[in-house]
Length: 293
Image (cartoon, rainbow, N blue to C red):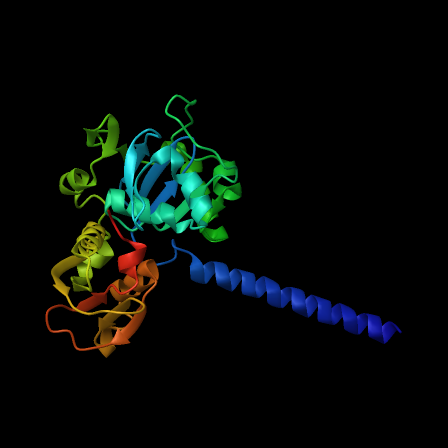
């Protein structure tokens, strides 16, 4: 009987150790901050929606998005008030709507998003919160961040006196039929370069985007990629079906830029011999996921 109890304890301890190791490995492998990126972009959605572009070494940036302005929502949704995005992503059951919307707005890769568990619509006349996210937002809101990422973010904002950031508060807003619309094209032209990942710039790889029907989607994705610091040299129309692909030479398949494009757009990597550029992005299903109207 003693032997059986001891054996059961050993099995339980072994299983626990395996689960702990799996949890640690999973968090490390999925951590955005452990990737070779100097700039990490984060959206905290809620009563006060904030976009942070955190630089590991230099100055970081903050943008506050008022709840009453409308932003373009890729995926064929048109324009939505910022304060209503939470309702939309719950109805559609697509939290990635947040990352796509603010990637489109800021022309950057939004790596991480946080949004409240309660289902609310926010209005501009509601109370203000601090610019910095609090403990509850970081650790208890719904997010795609790993535990390692959450601890890193918390440590970054906890040391407020040492956190250097610049707020971009002069947002380009245009009026249409009494509605306030965020002018993403104007923002792109004015602020291109602020969110560059220098690690991409140093590699100096360029990209060709191949689309099937929608030039507008190709153009939008081109601006997002350019805003990250990856040079786009060509947009070409060609019949493309199925899942999106990242094509490059065999010896470049694990290149940082190739990997980050594949991760962000959730594309397959494949070997090819590009002639126009170093890397090719075939949009495929992205034309629907990022559809604009």
